[in-house]
Image (cartoon, rainbow, N blue to C red):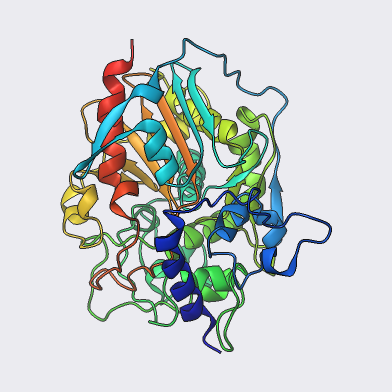
Length: 431
């Protein structure tokens, strides 16, 4: 049974019609009623079709098992500041000029928030999404994993130069095990995934988010063993964005600490600022998907970004979280590697470290990004934080190696270029 290809076709095909019709899952009756109507039920077979995707990304723990990430006793306060008139903001997206509300609607935005010096200056919830509702972070989760690794490196418990298999012998001979910890953290690992097990959909199936075909790995640990390492190749001289590296780093961190990824996130990060518990999707062994499985409210994602901004701006690293942030956000020099990756053309000029994009704009700006339109933007110099949570259809399979051609993914309106155009228009409005 060829489940994955069928999902791809239906999800991609649904994108064209979704752009011209409402995809608000509540208005359309998705998973409403006791019980929901048969044609309104969301399952693993149809979760990536519209409008089901919009419901699924807001209710991930209803789709698969999850592990909790505990909040702390004293959440970071987000006072309301003088509101920016961003509903009147216009900017270019390709040949078109869009207002911010048009951009948010057309990119299937669920929630969008702007902080300036820690104050909420713009906040919107669209298509029945609410402030108390958790939303999938997708690959923004990687940036959390990167901060965890940086905290262990700062403590001397994780050696960035060490071969990762030194911590996880089961990965010896694999691309991730033979590469160094830092090469994994910077996505500079040569790996080739089987065509029928790409680094995205293969992992989704192993984690239980998508149905599995017979013979596919049924847990994250086994999925890490399917990638092969090209003969006579050197790690470090390429940039290849994929899910295996953060999952391998997370495995190493569990081994070092004897704690789960979710416990580490709670103790070292989330409990410092969050108002609500977060959670992460897990496979059948209880292993968290450290490359993309986290969910939280929009405001707690903004608190996370603001905590990172404050830590990055501190003159001295006077506590473990600040040390981790400052270590993870040190400038890297791998812009040329990213520029040479055929799937990262929009990231030309960026560098990358510890699962954070470095914009190299002279203002210290960094970004976290995830599938389906998730974005965190932090500009320390301007005191600016932006978080965008979305459910834009994007089920094009990712490249299976650094040399493979990636399929088209996000449409131009939801591209890095379009988001940067928004940033350029927004910055002059700050006072």
